[in-house]
Length: 277
Image (tube, rainbow, N blue to C red; front, side):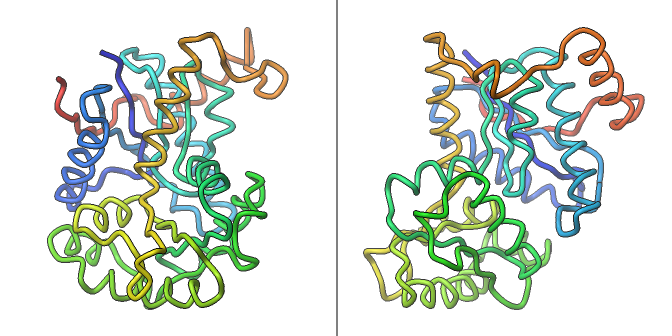
């Protein structure tokens, strides 16, 4: 059975183990026995993606972890389980299929909706995600203001509490989603991998008062997208050599040497495995 690494751009804080266990089980349930799943943390805290310097280092750490996971073996595909992901760089660096939440969401919603919107967890993330949608060519399928945030921002404590009782966060999210619907949105993507999973698990799948406007979990889109990419790879269809230039020779050696240094002398990462069979 093939192994899918679900790569989280987090340090793997033990105080959030309830969330990690929930997410690992949820991803495994999405896979439904089609692949073995393994949730892996980047393992180094680069400060998130809300400022350009932190984003640069966070992307580097995610890239480093992906390279190390491939070097360790037992990996047939990667999903970067967050918005604001360095998907193109990781795709160029490893030989297995790669996607991320934003890429999978933009690809799917560009086909399945006419004017989508993303609702996320903090105002500081809205320009980051809006830029990503534009870079992925998704602008025609999204509202002119494609990303909105609820207030107040949610904390890690809020998210852990939502694993068992998401009432508060659903309320914050839905209030913004309803305004996006008033602006013409016909689909709402959850701009957070954790909340996408939590909302879906608790049955929040459409906007309040608008049962024909779905609230879409990006984790599901990413899981299905990477499986499609895996099938294409099995058929010999892979990223183009000109579009995704792979480092070879000294460049590849330098990449892997620096990746190990970014992750520290011990390049292992806390992980949670889904049900193996």
